[in-house]
Image 1 (cartoon, rainbow, N blue to C red):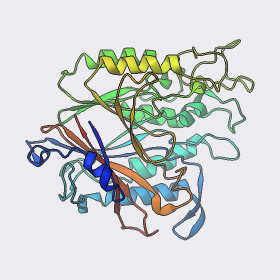
Image 2: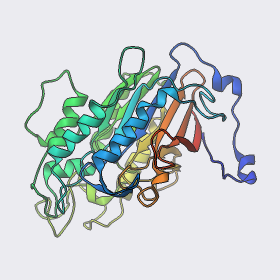
Image 3: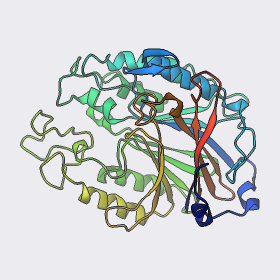
Image 4: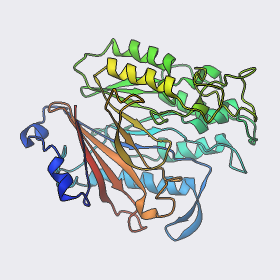
Length: 382
């Protein structure tokens, strides 16, 4: 069940909101509360027109400011609302999750993915200090976006250099620290996917979008998970995926300036031959997969660069999947023009009462450090 609320919500809409039993919402067993920050599309290599009184501010500077605010969350308190951990101190974060586009595509003078990854690493790998307990730093969990992948395999418009897999290699090596460190890119790295069990919930991190081959991998992963365990999917792409991400169905199936397919997932485009076509066949496959797995409770993504909580019903309206889309610090549809709207999400899950709360964190409302305000919020009953 999916509930959306804001300060501006009308009285009529308030009447339609399902208010959960407060005792069940606040019921807490040992280790029953999961808390994480969710953001996306950090786009190192870009500049922001205006930020905190300066013009043409680098992504490194903007993202450092956001990371500095995240580091202060353990001293903040959740708002008094009907959500998980209402009016309680945040104290800790189990994870910071970023769903891709770490490095902006290397077009039009944008810096190399190597430089972008080095900046990202300094700020988010080394610079995040917030902890998940008294001794350990919060986990940093990331997946690639279409910009990271195009930098690695090439693009249909000119890039300088033509290829640079640094952010793909960086993501892989960071997410798989126990495996041999990779220094040479292999196209199989386009499928960076993994899962984590956190305090009674199962988190699945996907490579761009859950195409048919990714669904096979998820199916195997879910065999290890109890059907009573809530499952959450994290990916870069919107659920109603774009045709351009698929393998070119034309000619040699390559990346070229005429067809403009980007070959980012290994599945060939099935709905025709034009890059601006529909993705009905692909979406129907994903919708059927979701319907088959009711333990999947929500889908988190970036890519379109604004905050929105909505239900994806699939192309035939056969499902009702709660989706959480988040803002971009560099390309936000609203925040790019109004920096006071810069936002990320903080998610609280009570795995005993089976309730998830997403709260929008407006982290730059007065264009100065240390000022946090709460925006939109939702409750999802798991």
